[in-house]
Length: 431
Image 1 (cartoon, rainbow, N blue to C red):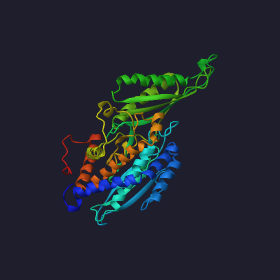
Image 2: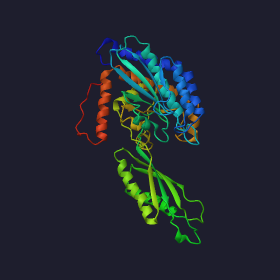
Image 3: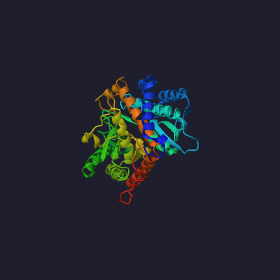
Image 4: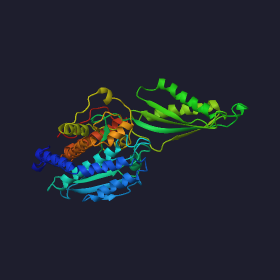
């Protein structure tokens, strides 16, 4: 610890961490029930009514929580508790995020029921020790945000736009995986739908009267495939033809494609989008079709990393027995995207991954089964303990919180390309 006052010494921190873990263990039955209920009723993005209501009821049954049932979005919520030290202290607002939407046809194949459980468990453990400690040297608000539509749409981005993250000092969540990792690369991403409008005609009797929208779709697909040769190695473009016509003997008057465009950083995404749009429009010109390009409302950002938070989490995780992966192929495989990336550009945060007792891959039926298996509970609660412990590290050492905020600011400057390139001075010594 920082050694500035006797009641902030290391012994107090270790005691609070141990007590937080015990409180989470004591709540294991109701936390497991919460997770199982969400897993048993998988709901799609923005339609998570039952899961939302179950989480709202969970926090309303817990003493001391103030709950806003429909916070910014219909299936979002906010639960808050404030306590700790004297009211003369500035309040430090610590956030935990819950996700609970599922995948079409696969249920909770990304384990969002466990994400909800981790967020709830970590918040309960932190609140229990802060509320039960006299003369704590900090005033704390614990905020739990229920964030819908991660899999499709980007609910967190909607909530950012509505100001839901204003006032938070640091934010935590953890995602199920097949290994423990403080960080796995998440990339910037934007969905786009391309529609071609042509003219129908009999494909055998008088095809020259038609304007073939399927030809446009095929050219678009091929244009993007050829573009890959000139793309950076870590850019990704992948898509499908959603609608290719209605019958072979009718010149297709309408076709539709859907693509995901991904780059390692949000700064590169506009460059890839501009190249892709030329592929879309040139296919229309070549076939005489009209093209309609619809980018999704929300664009997912890459993850902005804060090393201090990752180091603290790894230290706490190892103390609980986590075995963090060192596999370079895993640690450097830039693949998925998450709207938590957008959160990390407005609030310092961390998004570790945790093993759940299965080697199944995310977004498979096998992983859905694993996410509902009782064996996942030990690993899920262990992760919640590590998050609560990391929050305590930050709360009980003001210098650490300042370091986190300084790293966050520097990371944003680097990402936006406005950093000087000179080494940043440490805002505070390591605690």
